[in-house]
Image 1 (cartoon, rainbow, N blue to C red):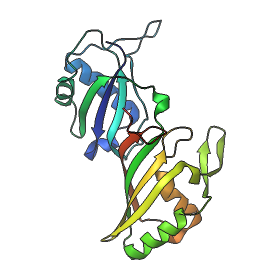
Image 2 (cartoon, rainbow, N blue to C red; image 1 turned 90 degrees about the horizontal axis):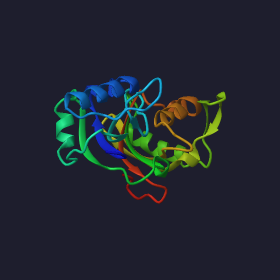
Image 3 (cartoon, rainbow, N blue to C red; image 1 turned 60 degrees about the horizontal axis):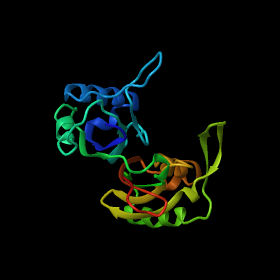
Image 4 (tube, rainbow, N blue to C red; image 1 turned 90 degrees about the vertical axis):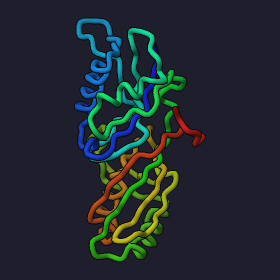
Length: 219
């Protein structure tokens, strides 16, 4: 079966599994579930599966997407349950379906985050964070293909807002997933570089949903 796609969650302790270890984990899961993956041809064959947007270590997600191919026909309706049964705690397959859209069509990611503040007032922090991220340009030092350089991350933020809670500020943002890719960690890093007084004592992020360029849900 060609051009198939999984949607899965990576939460809890599983957020600390690296991308390479996740790929190995998924390969073993297919084998344990009795699902034979197709392999590439050539001198160094490898299983035909790939994750569309590799997830940074420590970040959770309920909307990860993986493309794969199987050697034989299988019932996609029961495939999520078969795989989840042999996956470690924190990784759960929620959907399996035929791939309809190319990976280049994935443009935006909805993200939820927590900025924790040990002593600072969350209400005041939320107001000042809104003001900071409303700027037309937010230039940070970041790693690029050519090495370290200054980059304006503001065009890669489609939407961002903040809500104060007890001891923390909860954020919701829609960020560019590709061309350019904006790692949510850069939101906290921008504060550390440009406005230390607003930098959180701790930050955590979770991917919520994937969208195309027109903000239609991407599958």
